[in-house]
Image 1 (tube, one colour):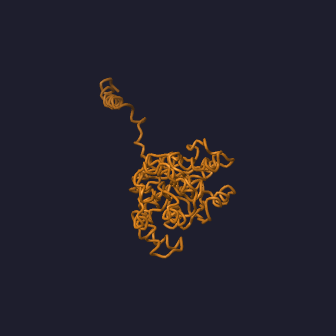
Image 2: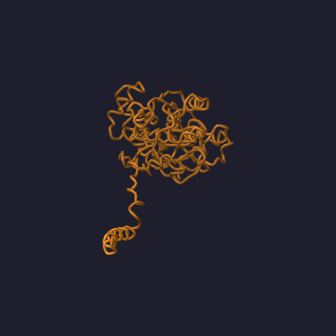
Image 3: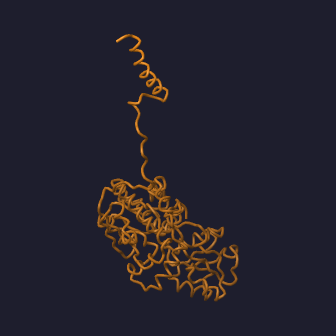
Length: 354
């Protein structure tokens, strides 16, 4: 082959190589663009069966985890078998969790806070609600926060939710428990009777009684359902060692419950019908409580450390061991954050704040 022919053949190859280098490398070294994960895609769970305990099975505030099973969301995301069991209170549900009879349970933040100082710590990973629905109703002569100073505030029992409501409401009107006398009186009916009789200045009473209280000439100083003061009312939790061992399973369970929780807003009628079947209540009663839940439920299931601070302070009144507990050890927000990061909220049109 003559030199002229050789260079005529070599020239096109050199031009191609030069062009490849100009574009950042030879064609043989290039790769196709990496396809990103689908929006909201969840990982494969480690387990194909989970067991969930519900500490108060007749309350809509603990319904999402059951609703997710009834809507087939766990199965859709890779957990085909889910057993949901109702218990009578947080104590029995916690016992079942510690004994390994359930993998998750739904209950109050107080349970997780108490567990921090035990050998079997649990963490809350999502919250069905962080809003209490009590009001601070006071006698006719008590019209302003200043009037509450030195007066008695009736609650059910020290260390209970009504005690927490009292602390939050005092905070909401710019006072502390040092400014009023928190008095252990009894159930709501007893508190209302004491307030009517004038033996207490104020009382913690559910907002469902608002009309009756006002008809008696009593004054409402603060409505917790509108105060944006968080209380860890009811959330999904699991033992710390279970969470560490099965992170994908935990993420899927949180995602399924979150999607079910959101459906209560987007298809309230269907959710109510399933609540009737689950709680064994009459349709009219279910309709009322489910519609009420829309006013205090957490559609995003998110929360902050504030939701645990007030419960800790209340618990300290009956269990001094938790007085200085670091509340951040009682919850884990990473799973909700992960669902935001991967686009699960976006994909399912779920608001990221309450």
